[in-house]
Length: 377
Ligand code: PMP
Image 1 (tube, rainbow, N blue to C red):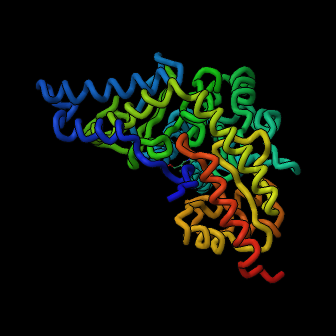
Image 2 (image 1 turned 135 degrees about the horizontal axis):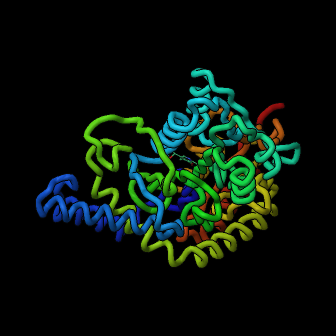
Image 3 (image 1 turned 60 degrees about the vertical axis):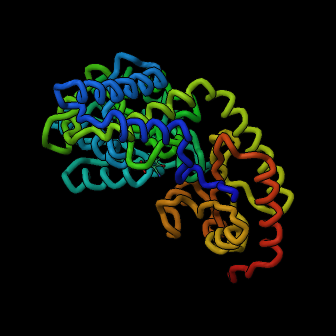
């Protein structure tokens, strides 16, 4: 099996599996309980928090565990607007966000906020200047992702947010770092982010766990109301096994970030050269994250290619897993031509991906290019 869909989800590290099992079988108390079992469970949560904060380089911040980045993004957007958007009803985002940011902004519009959406320019670039100039004194929030999940495009967040904070200290900054965390350097301070969202299952931890980093002093309004866990920001008993597992994955991954990045860059360059030889078109920019390589196989439908590769147990994605075969509005925003739009597939790598995996992909794809039915235009 050759799995090249790691931006959709990843295989859980065995150490992270063991951590979850340990918490389920040996430390299964409720972290809110006052007795010893509760305190032991709380210790696992505290350990995971420390791992995440230290990976993000800001131990003075806080971590709120969520069910994933969808909940984290919703909580960040609505939670910040509730506190900071009482008088300032203007918010800024980009047109390439994941639906878990784009949809909450749509909802903000319905609630009467003025929503300003920054789009890539004619070259498919979102410049720091375009983000900076979209924010004014009446803006309570800007939310922009670090790395796009469909193309690997890296947005100039550090540059933009630092200047936005300088010009408008009261404007809150949120960054969806799901596709960046543990792949690119994600430093909370360098990003000048008030809130960062993360997801476990993109970094070899289980599905159903995510986290929000909240900078010291930043206030959020909860979306859930209940028992008041996690400083009243996310009521509900903490998912200790998932949290501990997430912490374990972060502890293991953080020291190897550079080595894994270099390996992904090598794989990505190798794939680009090989794919070029068989007539596939590289969509991702040279400056994109090396973990995501978006390509197009002209005149063959994405889904046809996906299922053709699947015959040999080679797994890729058509656009992004979330768009489930629909034409991607985000790729259009990146100015991918209509001709190629139907033919895009996304390859995404893990630390286990090898050049032999790319060879197998290219061999099969080469056969597909010769034999598959072409789209009639
Ligand atoms: N943001 C981005 C950039 C993503 O790629 C994803 C997952 N596709 C999410 C948010 C949502 O994460 P989760 O699956 O943890 O809800």
